[in-house]
Length: 556
Image (cartoon, rainbow, N blue to C red; front, side, top):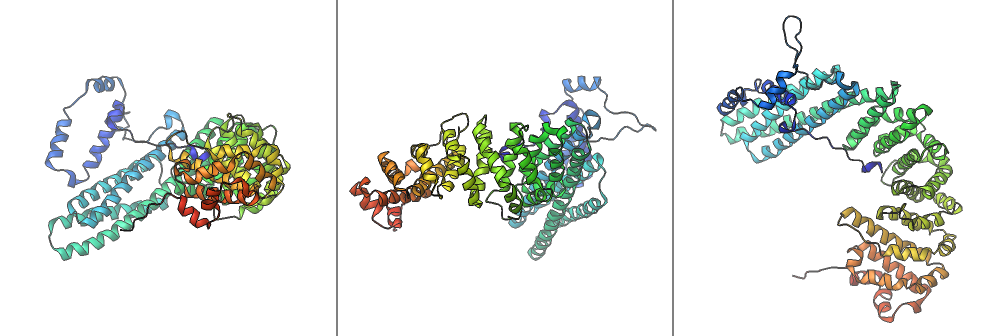
């Protein structure tokens, strides 16, 4: 799903930079250090003096052959613009660089502020002051760089001024604490510094949010106003990259109108090649409630239904539309207002999704479509009835035999989730029997991870648990219970109960297997061995659970 895309932005080290970039970094360091007297200790001054005479042959050769800056009128050399890239690749390059610089700087400043809180609690005044100086440098550098790269909105300028004043106040007050041993004074200063530090953190967070919102507005404007597919695609890529940095950024992106702009793209035939890209970004934004609200306001569900049901839509666009459906129908969301409009299009969406499961060309497409169906079956039983009418049992069980479509425990988790929800309906049992679904459930009960990945292990546990739940529900039908007994289902369930390693020490799998075993025993008591019946069937469920669970109690 969309949430699986992870793009990280890493700050380049000096050693890995080009010669021109090294000069820029050193120039920035000179600019900052000249304004902070606290850093001008003898060792630093000596290093800076020696640095003037240090050269690298490779750098000098390159610099002699390259133009550094143009002469302006009056003989003044061009100022250093750290994030200037307009001439190199268009405004979208500038915006991307600004965003990357903002995120890198924000991370550095946040780290320094966090260190200050920790060191303040421990009373390490020398380190508190040095950290305050560093934070002050980073904040001033951020403000200067951003102001050089783009005009700062008036409202943001107010935050900048207040933030810079508080940072300077923080630096001055921590310096005073270095020159006294008065415990009463230091205690009172600790409280004052803590309050100032909290204000600095809040002001910095607000300023960064406004700066990010300003850059996001530029990207959204490119999506809305540009006729160039390349420009729009680049802007969408930058928005998608931002969504991977957490829900706070997703909320900002949603509030600035990204969802509205992206659905405008998805409603224009001339941009059909961008549908999949735009919908993947929408799915990422909709991990927060604000994104879903914006989707509901622009009738995004109707647009999704159109893309899913349109025969001319390519598979990639339909798969990403399914990802959006899976996101907005996730049980984790607390708001359900959008589901009212979803119900109006549910029949068309469910029909299109099960068709996509049947025709999926790869495992990722099947996973997205089945995940959307699994979520839908949780909140409305009518969806289960629609699926039964569309031969969903046959399609899903058939897909389990197709390695091209169902190739991971994650896909199997979605399939068995749908089957578990369908098994609540009485008419599901005959179809499962007809498609030899009991055999498939027993195979799923033996699902094991192929790697030490914790997420894959957890997925296998869910597959085992839901397979046992499905078997228990279906076994209310006597014919299903007899078939399961003939296929030696009790032996598999008993092994899962008695062997913690078989179920990866999962208590939820144990409870589900005990419930399924008791359901089978109720329909066919002769299918269970007396010893197993005595320990796993006859006692209370909690007693059997304690007997089988891997509990190590200490009575010391």
